Amino acid sequence: MDSTNTRVVVITGAGTGIGEATARAFHAQGAHVVAVGRRAEPLRRTAAGHERITPLAADVTAEGEPERIVRAVLEAHGRLDVLVNNAGIVRSGALGTLTAEAIAAQLATNLVAPIHLAQAALPALESSRGVIVNVSTSVGQRGWPGNSVYAATKTALEALTRAWAVELAPRGIRAAAVAPGAIETPIGEHQGLTPERLAAVREWQLAHTPLGRIGRPEEVAWAIVQLAAPTASFVTGVVLPVDGGAVVA
Image 1 (tube, rainbow, N blue to C red):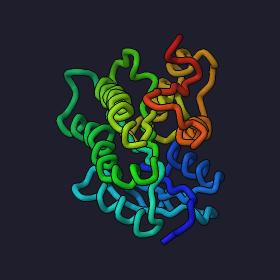
Image 2 (image 1 turned 60 degrees about the vertical axis):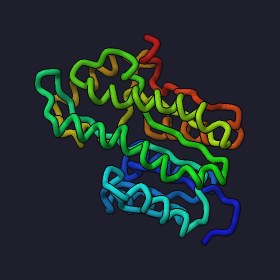
Image 3 (image 1 turned 60 degrees about the horizontal axis):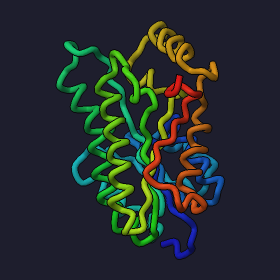
Image 4 (image 1 turned 135 degrees about the horizontal axis):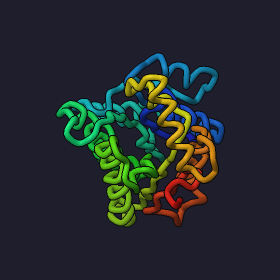
């Protein structure tokens, strides 16, 4: 068990993209990071060369896994200071084509799992006066044809963030969220889009991003680290867009 006061951070979906960048950003600040994801090999790549990043393969949607994750963290480090609910999946489809599996999978990963993990972590976060940072999407604040379920799960996560900020404040826990826009991550490949379809999506994203480029995972990681920082101790309930201006365009 680590008896120091070094902060301990749990990040879901830490094998690629925003989760990977966030794990390394917290590590650079001296934190112990537990990198959670379904697949062991991407987690090993996240941790490679970073002695304070520990991979933990787990399916956050499976029964009992949130409790196992928190138990493993406390056994290894004795504390938990920051929970980053980053894991998310997209299953595109217009109304009329949505399958029960696609709906259920997005609800389970994007919305239900963060609830269960936050509940499992609650006693430890209260003890450390910790922080929950949820990862939403800025596009969910606008009409997003073909991705209504994904957008709905993420805007619901924002509602949870605001409610938790008020509900948990008396227990010394802050809750905040980041809402990324178009970011260079493999989420498109993970949902099985063809290169042509990916190119079309990128074209649409660029047309709706005032800064005129795709964001980098490190730029979202910076925002997550800042919201979780002790110096942000009077910030709670906020949903911070990191989207190149997309939500206000």
